[in-house]
Length: 110
Image (tube, rainbow, N blue to C red):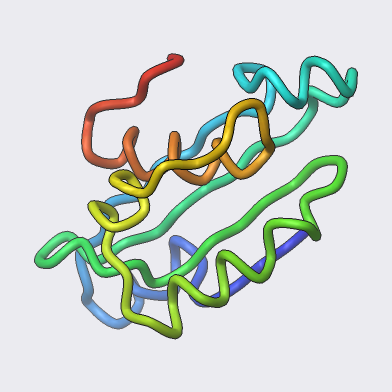
């Protein structure tokens, strides 16, 4: 499990409206090829400006995603930043892009 930044409940407790989206590894080609489709990536972003506030990931090899999650928060990335960044295929990192796209209503594989 990887948790970076805020959980979905923490901004709500502060009165901040959020967009939260989850994308399952079951819909990811790399996870399928690893036979490790249990798990997900979830993104939490502020509704007003789509700034990413947190990430949560559960599943095999999710620790590999932790630096990307930390960097996105440190640099003040938005959902659009992550959604618009080309992620290599097939990789587990695509799930972060898909979660951002889903939060924006545009997931490719779900």
